Picture 1 (cartoon, helix red, strand yellow):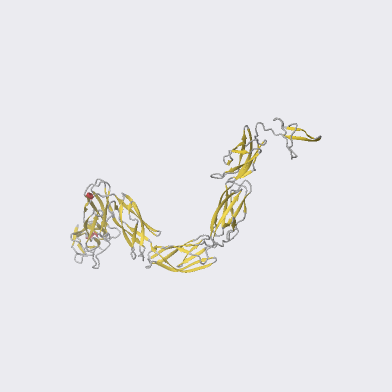
Picture 2 (tube, rainbow, N blue to C red):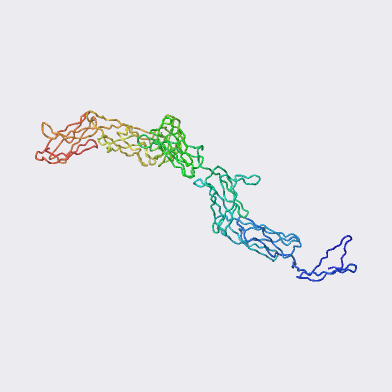
Length: 637
């Protein structure tokens, strides 16, 4: 220190600086001041922190823990006051905890504060973990460990299924290390920063997530929501706040509105009834006791908290005015609602008539069929797979069907679907490849005359063949049609193999009639057509009456058995019946006989019989065309 100091005029004091060696840790002594023979002495003791050549970090101060997603403040302390501004490097041992790269200690200060942040895990659950924070300058480092505990991750709210207020779920980023308190604020809005309390949703101001749990469901403090409100719920943990919004709905009551659909009615049973579904949507959920909806003697239950009812509706035949009327009743725990209503309805699509096969490049006509004639135009949506159909077809008011064009696209199996107001019907269709013009059918051949029998369920089969104008370039499907499928049925198509010019198919002659009591069915001409529209040809095929039954009356003159052959109709010219027996040595008839044209039956006498064979059973077979019948005849009876 100096030997003397000057005290400026007009002042009474002057500071004196005492300097020590850089290595000195403690200094003690006496300072004496003398002025005009007056002496004052004072003892001086000071502990000096070494700061040579510069101050370095001596410690870090941090709280014991921080919650993930939140932040806190730390402090770096130097071993002495900074002579100039000093930058101290900071690092974290865990990427989930962030600190600035450096913190600056101002001149003349020993401490500086910094912000420590913590991250929530991107996915999954994360338990508490430790992170070490290090402060470094030069070769000197100070460190401190902080624990990162699970933080607030989610807040969600939903109205309970029984309409009793709201379930609030608070989610942490991992299992709570200790009992963790979360603050809650419930408000419908804010005025000057002050929350406006909700009338319907009341939650506690604080809740505790127990140690070891990652979430907590908070139950409301009201049993039943009295109002509709949009409520904001804010949860806060360690400065981190998350909000969720919910529009609460009170229970349905008289005066609330009900929305409905326009049902589509489809056939039900075989007596002409139609049925559909009336869907009702309440503008508020059913209360804790649920609700019962009743319309036209049919009911549906609405569970608590739900808003939707599905009530079956029936009508005896599709209503001509396309409306159903009645009294709608809604029974709730708080009262009943009654309303006379009249709802528009629509006929459901019930079928599709589609030609099969559909030949690619040869558009054909298909038909959509409704359950009844609507009082207004109905637009049916169409979709096709493997076939091309229009997007819609309109069924005019007063009609129950409409046609549309269909074309193939390739070959294989396709489908068509029709939809009207949610009601659908569909069908599959065989799609055939394109048929070249030069391959159009040239002829339809049947190897023999076609006769029917009396058996409707077992028609006679006759082989037929279609001939094309060229060898098929690929397997072709040739459509077939009959002008009278109740008399002569044909398959939907005949396949002609690649490289061939012909394809075989079976005709089925359907009988079941009889020329009896003078009601006779004569020969019928049926047109069989082969080929798609624009490439087809047809042939008329005569379907002739055939064998109905045979009887064996006794001839009054000879005493022998005759065979009486009855026809299914008036015989065609040239109809020949064949007769055989398994014992021609005992009983014989002519091998064949022609049935007179127009006759209903013919009687054929036996040409021989063995009288000694009385009691013997002989099998007699009568055949016309492909129809035959065998009878057991006991001789002598």
